[in-house]
Length: 179
Length: 177
Image 1 (cartoon, chains in turn cyan, green):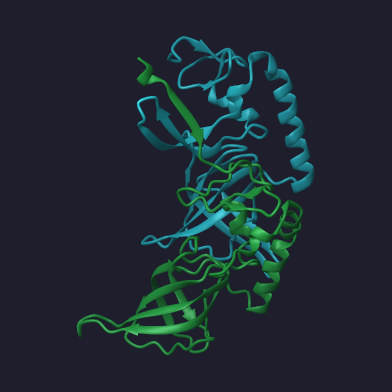
Image 2 (tube, one colour; image 1 turned 135 degrees about the vertical axis):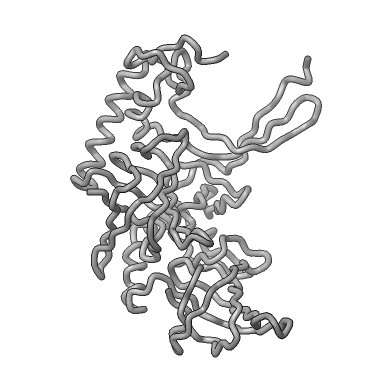
């Protein structure tokens, strides 16, 4: 069944290519408000048919798919509480990004940071800072790659930030700030 | 008709004991089974591996339980800062344990194989031999057979390949970024 004719269960806007609930749908904007508590998770699945054929493929698991429309008010409250808790824990920067991996792109001499947005959102052009004992280091985001696409990597989302310079001083586990 | 029915099986080991994300060991996921039956996802393993280096005989992370892993994670960034301080705030340090050279045709530079282990930070791209100051371009990194990890990662024994005319590297030298 396609998404044609569906409306967002929170804002009422007509939507397509939506985030599906058990009995409705959300637009990407409203789903983004909940992602801090219901982040997408990546894994692989094996599909086997009765005929015996099997294939393996990567999938994104969406916990929002297990919610129904009646769960949304509680889900919004949960997301808001999580946002407040993180604001208290991390601070008042505009956004925070936690690094899972830092890889050098072979030919380009650019670094790609894999990780997730803990709070706020990250866009191309943002300056990221990391505090080390030896000082504060800053890098600039040239490009943001995120499922399902778009100009910004939103709260709770996992994605890749391509930097404009080398950044060997950033390590998995670092929490980067965006002022 | 019945051929259309399909069963879907997730290929991960369950939720990571530290971050709750699916822990995958397949397709480079890098997950590890803990001593208490839980697991760590590849992203959390990557944060801890420099503290618990792999050896051909064992993976010390598999001896931890979830509580040990959580305390290790809480102290990991402090331990990383300690190492950075010890090595002059270098971005990455790789200890060379063995050096072999591979002569090629007269028209191509000698290929050097630097076997060792990263102490912290990812060793890739250009690096410097700490003792001599020589600049080295790392062409590739190969994890030792039978071990798992990604090229250049700290805590994983591997061989770095570099093409240089001369390279005055000996076991015990450090490669730094």
